[in-house]
Image (cartoon, rainbow, N blue to C red; front, side, top):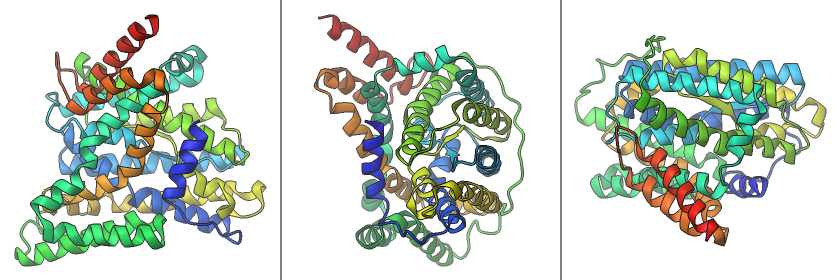
Length: 403
């Protein structure tokens, strides 16, 4: 089921592969598409839980460096095209807390650290992975869909608030989706940068000189906060496992590669622990972008496609240097403009999550309750809506199943 769903999503974001593509080129494309299509979501998520622009740039830097090194190590060690990524659904979960999170940035960092430890434990303790596997897929997908709903509304909200800035982005995105869908989001992002530049010129360069353009690691000492662990760490872990790691394994298997589960969980878990104090939320197996490095675009010789994983990792390390520039541009952008691009980036994921949530008739009512709870963003006892959405959905499923 995961394989078919992500193949469908891949068809929405890719074009017919070329059998002449070389592994190195495929790895570069994998990194460029993966980075440009979702970094705005990461920035929005980190800012939503209290990060300053400097801390957000540090987080983006930490994430890119840790999973870049991780995929180089895994690909070279296993001779398989293992690609890693930041958790885009996890970043969307954080972004959905923009108006409800009441904790501190250090408490959020502590929650990121807990997620890393849970991922390491998942690789070492099979029972923990089995426990996550017992959460019904429709419930997990419904929670993700509810979290993504508000973000996917951002393009239309921005269109109503600032039509002259948003229309060019939407037009370019639609045209690119028609002719070369893989580059639709990067094209929309470039258009957004042009629009931002025009706005800066019209405003006389206001705010331009005050930005820090070079990324610097910014250490934050984690603090343990029960509300942050329950409201951030647990939903973030569940979303990452259900929407990234499990589909990532399925995508690789669809191309004939078995994922080295324990090494992958160890590398991503340790990478998350190392990156957390610098602002990184979580790293994991790549899902959609994994197909670019593991599929035919990486060459006809399947035994050499691991080179694409190494090439992607090296490219990510180069892109890490852009973290400061990207966060600085996001800081001077008109309100809601880059959020609109993030909404476009998450649209295919939202559609996939909705399909997964409601395709099974027996789960539709529990999934519906999960969806509306997550979408409402309710906060109780300082704990955000994603956790309560899981609680409501699982309770509803348990009661209705008994009936």
